[in-house]
Image (cartoon, rainbow over all chains, first blue to last red):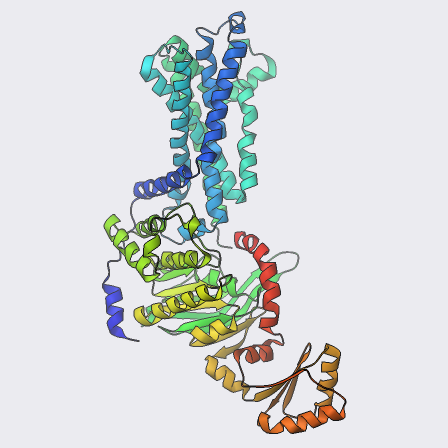
Length: 274
Length: 335
């Protein structure tokens, strides 16, 4: 072998020290978002569906809402949180679909062959999904304002509503990402995002929590969505309710932590060298 | 210099289950620094399993493998640093542009943004994709994607490069391109290359050493020239109308020449002085009332080596296998 060419090859800069976890997460989030934004056809349906339901609920039930006690403000302020929450649900699958594609196309293996932090492989799709959800929730809120929404807590309250929607979505995304890693199949991942759908209705979906009774009341009290809806409704119709907000944040964090643990397990199964 | 060598000792990989499958069954070989090693075998012979073990994507059941002096089981991180890998399935996100993919890959290996960008430019030039930098990989041809995948494998300046069937599914021109690239990487940068292939021509063309793997075991190993020389003999090839006629031809010529092989309609007769024996062969066939549709004289090829070693002809099955593997490949990779 020609040693001279060898020297040239060796003299090129090779970094030995791996970058830190936040940098890896940042790089992979940017990658996921770049890839996601190049398929806008996957991003638009969840937004369209959220807006569709918002308009439908408002037009069909808005007038009848006066008969339901405990709405405590405008019906729009009561139902808009539902639209955001269902958006968080349907949108949480987007990032996982992107991950499944990486697995199917072998790109995930290519990433595994680098010294990338394993946690970054999990957090990047979840956080990229969160960014998409944030934009989506902001659009729904904007449509709400066009329909005449008058938030009790002003602009900051609207930001809090969007933030809660994103936080809830992170938990759901942890679940769909686990499904993606566990199954490696697009169909199974799609199916997993539907699993959460009934949860939307095991909650004070159309009437306040006080009007629920029996098993539905029990289910609703165990459902993190309940606390998110309550807090969002308080922000839009009543005012700053520290108790409702902290409870909802805790509920979201509990869900997110549990789902992240599931995702860690799913990743360890996927990357097990067998 | 150890950091460019591959040493494999008694490597075994079996999958437990109702029927225990042993994909790799006691494989031994060694790839010296700066050499191109061709791992040749039909589908399912254990080529991909071996490459997955050597690149840390799978664990061996028993045995030992050192890549660049590092143990593939206990020093996986070090192996990943010295080895570059281009798997059979091209591992790129087609929605991304080549520059973006290469820079990201470089940064994940620890390079700064500017170093990763400089390296990406250099690699795009090397694989001749400089004029397609700002296009999504989905617009690339099969050959271009393969070259991009090759560039991805080279981002961290590996000392050893693993290529799993680098030209399967490529048209002949793209195949030549990839061959040229592989040779250049080997000669100009001194990279040791381990490549698996189903194509004899490819192994013959590129490899310094060829190992033929059949059913998880190495059936023959040596330089292409040595393997061919070991065959020793020229041959007379006779093609008949039907396999039945070929069988008759085989029994007629049983005592002529040193060795006979029958493969469907073809009879191969190995002799030391093939040309001089043609009149004898023709007379014998005429006496038996047989008329072959073709009679040719050949020097031994790797194909002959393969046929002798495995009892099957690789080329004949290739087309059928290509058809069946196209649909199966994705499933295989996901396992």
